[in-house]
Length: 164
Image (cartoon, rainbow, N blue to C red; front, side, top):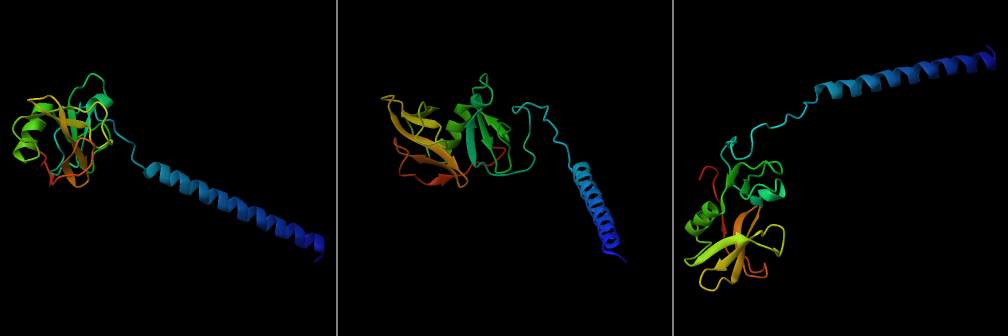
C-alpha cells in the first residue's frame, strides 16, 4: 500500500467518524429539546390562585412592581416565582397579622416605605400619634422582622403561615 492510499483511507475514516459524531450530537440535542416541558402560563390572576401546598412566607413584595394597578402585597413562599405569590394580602390584613405576632404595638400602623433602607424592607412602621416613622418591616428567608428607622437592629422574627 502506498502512502497516498493510506492517506485516502485515513481521510475517509476521519470523515465517517466526524459525520457519526455530528449525527449523534444532533440527535442528543433533539432528544433534550423534545423532553423539556414547555412553560405553561398561569391564566389565573394572583388574587384568585390558591396556594399549592402549605408553606411559610419568606418574603413580601408590593404587587404594584408587577402591575401598577395592584395596590396589594404579595406574600411569597420559597418556591414562588416573581410576580406570582402564593397569597395576596391587603396592608390591613398584614398589619393585623404582624400585631398578633408582636411585631407591631398598639398605636402603630403600616404604610409603603417611600425609600426603604434595603429591598427587603418595603413597609414603614409609623406611630399613629406623631405620624413619624418608627421602623421598617422586612423579610428574608428566615421570616418577617422589624428594624429601626435606619434598617438596623433587627428584632425577633415571625413567620406567617400560608392560609392565615
